[in-house]
Image (cartoon, rainbow, N blue to C red; front, side, top):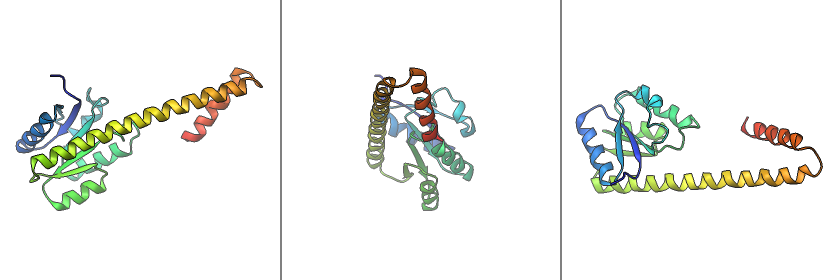
Length: 168
């Protein structure tokens, strides 16, 4: 059976690894373990992953997850934290986690939350794709209208400059 998606995961202990494996495999997702979170960006599967699972046990992990949330290239990857206490749960939400699961949660509840996260990610991807297509169509219309009055090179400079202003 082909997995639905690839998920990266980090867990410091074996029981947490086993729980994460059980949850994701029951939903039909492939799981790749990352042994060092600092090497996450360089992992070959990082760009194409559809979920990041992290067992929170240290503050450095929170800082890394927060930086992933603020990076435009990784902001849409859902982040799920597995925590052992309410103190870590609050810290995880403050770090920008999309879901925070207690290690004592029921497997069915966790599977439902994960399923909802995957659906939300799919919706966001479709929405972003539609927005990009609409922007491209808008640029094509602007190009057509302006080309009647100025050279194509000037139109391209205008469109590039307006894109730079919007992004900057």
